[in-house]
Image (cartoon, rainbow, N blue to C red; front, side):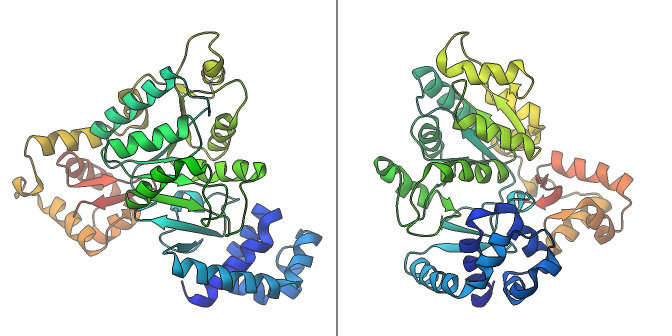
Length: 375
């Protein structure tokens, strides 16, 4: 993304604080932040239902551009990446959500588009039971799906336990923050946050000098939900932030899971209610979770690797398998329709070939429906 487009996108983010979906709709229609600003005087023609407040804010774009300049200088000094909606590094799962932020700010070193991304959320009053559930779940998850990225919100309770258990199991973990990256809330979690920058990262839609206001926590929950394949609720009271995240996840057509708790336990009530109302699938282990998502091939590949069955032990590929491998070597991460053209194999036959290659641990199906060749 060029400097001017990034600058304009940040300025629009400043404009967009009061309307999450409206400006994203404009952005998608016009194709870039630069085009949105270029059309600021005739936005009604592009988006007839544009709000008066949005129109007024666009007339004051110069002051927002000055804020964008300061933001870009700060980010450059502090090794913060600016991810615009059209960037390849922007979380692609989130990109498809109607209210996706135009810009995200990221400090870290992980790939936000991992093949497996989940969020673990719940109460800030995590009990000993909840802590034990998180420890067992993430420890087992590491064995069954070792490339999974764990997302949460760095808050007290379930969030911080999920981050710390991910780090303890050598899994990357990302915290989505409710404020700018010039600050950290809660400050008590700074040591964990510093470690996460090396093994995951910190992500936010908020510019510097943005406080952790109550509404911002609700807004950040949609990022937690939208960038993930699935949402796992560990413990929750009858009302709480974790339930907001699960509701958003369902709206985004993401899978929602919950660990049950004892009847009458205050911080299991929300989980039990979701399960009762068929709004979450009951799980008791990572094995349940993996099976429900159809991620068993991850485990089979891990088993094959542990037994020393590496790719070089499969030198004799069929002609069709070799053609598919060569097509993915030329351009990785292709959907089956494109791969069918690249390899010149009908889809009906290609599905069989792809399954055989998955069983050999040579490729995997990504969440977005693309096939990824292990390199």
